[in-house]
Length: 258
View 1 (cartoon, rainbow, N blue to C red):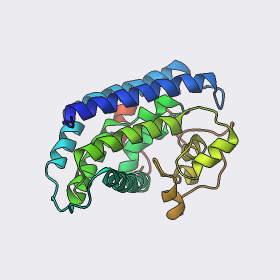
View 2: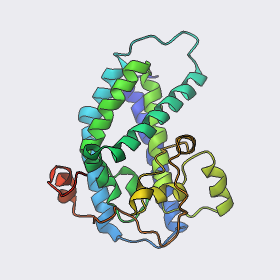
View 3: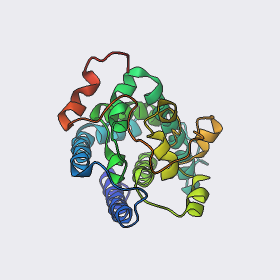
């Protein structure tokens, strides 16, 4: 069965199992001492809860609608299992540029900043996003789906892959050095992504990859800064705040433009 409900359920089960596995692993083998405690985890969970509701109300309908409005130009030979690989590469390249735009365009940064204000990283950080960013991302992705004739099954597979990759790369999981170096040659690992969350702007504005590390190498956005246990996480010259404050922060007037 390949109907949207079945595919969505399969995605939820796969991602939920992976999150539980990483949550347990990062507590058994932490890379650095945990900071922030339960208040920050609950803030992250609150933002995630808002986005679960938004997903049901808007993100899923937008995605299904877009998949049904594709331009239908895909040739017959672009089919089968390898076509899924092509779709995943296209979507991963798109999300690299979308992520980069969220840092380079001040209006988008106002929403994406909520993700970066987290002052410690663990699996819960992977689902900490402002609803405004989630909604805009769904709208832009819908255009990509329509123009590039990407089927719904590929989109849902990509969503599952991205969520699982995000949980892994934000995790406080200590990996053996040789394993992390080997993985980082292909995919985004915690050592790469923690630098992206370094509270120094030139590092924050680097390492944009979501799944594959090749894009940052190809477009010269890979930071040379090594991850260290003492690395300060967050946003330069800004502090995290309460749940309600995070919801309204993108709309609050601030000196500077982002």
